[in-house]
Amino acid sequence: MEEVRIKDEFIKLGQALKLSGEAGSGIDAKFVIQDGKVTVNNEVELRRGRKLYKDDIFSYNGKEFIIKNS
Image (cartoon, rainbow, N blue to C red; front, side, top):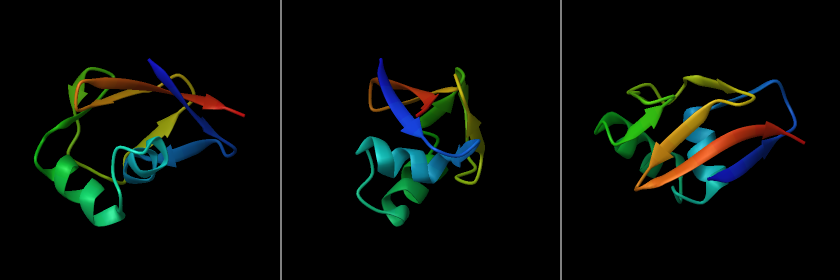
């Protein structure tokens, strides 16, 4: 599991995908989320604006990422 470090209280799912390197742009993130390919805390998430907080886990493309504060 890889860490995604954030400075604020939360990060939106689309931004987290870009920060993790799994999406090259917001448009890429939008499509993989809308296609049901991303899970948050083991549940399929279809909203790219979903707020992720410390210790939330999102998965995409066989990889898991955990949100951590820097």
